[in-house]
Every structure is written in structure tokens, then in C-alpha cells.
Image (cartoon, rainbow, N blue to C red; front, side, top):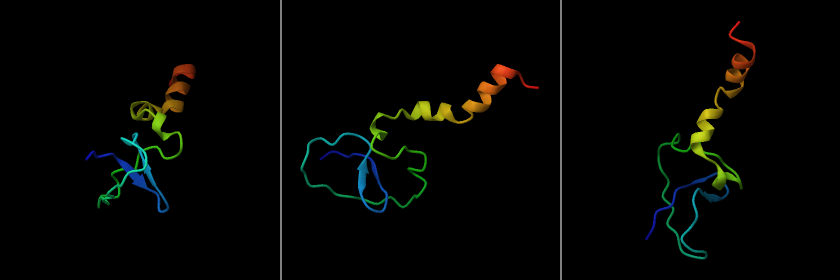
Length: 72
């Protein structure tokens, strides 16, 4: 048995890492903490997302403007 993290969007369960194999039985356990997956990317390309890079995106525009135009 292997544990794989994912989320449920109200319609489907989306895995955030590859499943060990296709067409297998699963057990879904709902976690009570609603904020657990708050910052995780959602969508078909989410498997390619780098969470560390997402953290850098916050405030990126502001940092770029300060770098380009100064803090004035």
C-alpha cells in the first residue's frame, strides 16, 4: 500500500503525484483541515508545478518594479 497526496475539488479527486499503477483500488480519506491544500496548484499541469518557485512568485512584480525604478 502506498500513500499519494491529492485534493478533491467537489467533482473529482486529483492526485498531486503519479499513482503507482493504473486501474487500481483506492481509499480516500478526507482531512479535516480545510487549509491543508490552500496554496497547492490545481489543474492538468499541476504535476509540473514547483512549489518553491510558487513561493517566489508572491511579490515578484513589486520586487521587479523596485529593482527597475528604485524605491522612490
